[in-house]
Length: 593
Image (cartoon, rainbow, N blue to C red; front, side, top):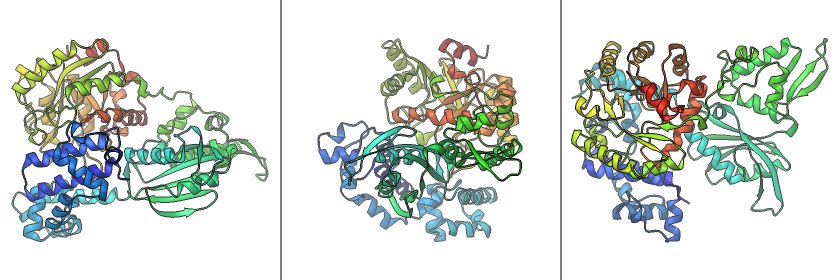
């Protein structure tokens, strides 16, 4: 079976290869749009093709040519167009294209003029100072490319939070359980049901932005049967370990998953231990020792004065362990040894924001620019998720790669939103834009159109190489525009692909407070920007945060959960986040009057 993600990956690669070749931009965009449609579609294209009950061309964004290629990929795992391009362009160039400062034109130049085929080739040329001699590059660009290569090495072997969570959930569904739920499954080789309880642990449970490997704990009767099934998961590339109490596999994506069986009596202790972090566990162990206990994955034990006899005290649940250590229960996202134990001792931990607290989403795109869903489809999807208000924020004209909107197109969209709003009384659709901040700090659209909008989101999509002073001057000029309400993805980073531009976070917070501009926590898994460390400064400095999805498809509205979990890692409560407020209160919060 070919999953939607694999089909989308083929289309992404076709688009990248066409870009390197310098092909027609509209043809490239059609493949990118198709990839996003397929990746976010709620049903399996493999099933749709094999059952033959659905005309693929009836799906928005899927034309005759794309439909044919989907059928090819379902049948063989690939398509002729992709194979033909790989004969013309080395596949290894796709990795080079992901480096910061190396777009399709530079990649083509490196390949044709310098005979470069791998990232290692690029690194050698950059180290030798030879890249700066190429047209369009220079010393600064060469340095940025080297930094990008180092960034790539830093994240080697790691995966996005969303990828790790999706893999864990797929495995738990395959086993017959959802995270943290008791379940009964019938093995393909057994008729007897196997009752078990499964829950992810490790950095996935702590919601780290990148994950090395995934730990899953399972308890119940006949866990060995669960492990036997686990190692046969269809996505497994290799089995690293297979025993009665532990199974370990590496998926085809490179992600390692470890499944451990633990006794029910020790589930809480094992969950606490394997959730970590290491630094949190060391601090907790030190506290336990001072109180006359020892703690490990089997439980909390009381030690006599001679340090010889141990008596099991707690371990069935995490809550009872923290209680015995005279601490508030510490949510997994806070377990990084950043003051959470001291706060728990004083009973002063924050009441962390919950997904249900968020009432609105203030950043999303439609088919007017680079989204895959229409205005109406985005509104319906938001309504279905219980959101009370949203802002439609398509790109502006300078972002040509995203088909950014000029003043006339935005005026038409404003009219369309007004017309659509009359159909609904259970959701408010704000008229908005994601307006580019140009290199000198000017905004990409005139005030005459911005003043007609409810929410103006601004962001940086170009000139990432500017110095800190240039970036901060640029932001101050943009923030001083009275129409600006929210600054999106404030550092511009893309995990695994692009480091942050030279923004001074302390000065950024100061500017946001001075001009009453909210800062966005962007929920896109490759962004999660601002990060947890930066977010913790927001309440201290009195700067409201907005959690938005930056959705380019209806399914991406579900990314809100990643933003919320990142906010929790930043110790944020609902009161620190503007879009947890009722609509009228929210509008007052973002008002600059």
